[in-house]
Length: 298
Image (tube, rainbow, N blue to C red):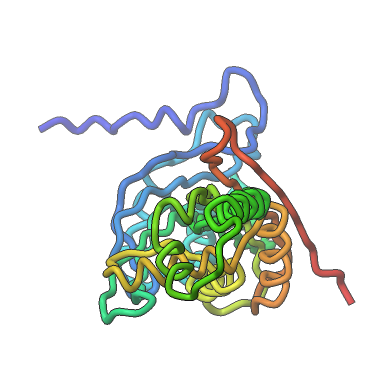
């Protein structure tokens, strides 16, 4: 039997003494529990290497510390515990620890009119850090929605007016004729352009928050935007969605302002940066607006 001790190259002295801000692993595949759901995720785990004389860190210790994510629902307390474990397992080497979890949160959404419902996927990144024993958590969330251009809607209405003048010039208006005309392609000669849009929310959480308010933030954002994309629909739902878009015209600037106001009111949010992207159907480029906010300290 071989009695030789396995070599630990990481424990050797570095050839060039220099501290490093982040050392670890990215894209670690693992299942996690989030909002009571078992989800497939990728994790980035790392620590600083403050001992510039050390050759490297012990990556397997970081990897093994992530097993808790399979057994307990992700919360700020759990994230704090894992980061503490990172540092405890690297005593004398590291002062700072970092963890990011990338996954897709699934929320079941009802249709607008019919009894149908379906699942929507929201890309989410949970970032936690422990720097000099100061704990911090951030959330990144993508929320899809529909946006209809106010300018395009006004131009479409004008074309419909012009067509009405042409078709009913020098004619006595009859209610039945006008109603029939409105139901034909000849009557509604133009429609405004709309597009699937995305809100990217980067949210800083209060230091002593107990739970991750993912669902609450998503619900607040969708309520502010007013035209969340749908899942399973019947024709009545599609018609209701068309009505919602027609009554909810917005530029990207409008969407950014609505979200700014809504996120300021979300419990547990201390700061945020948001970006909305309207993937134009008129242009080959996107329309984008950004906004940020930070709660002033009392």
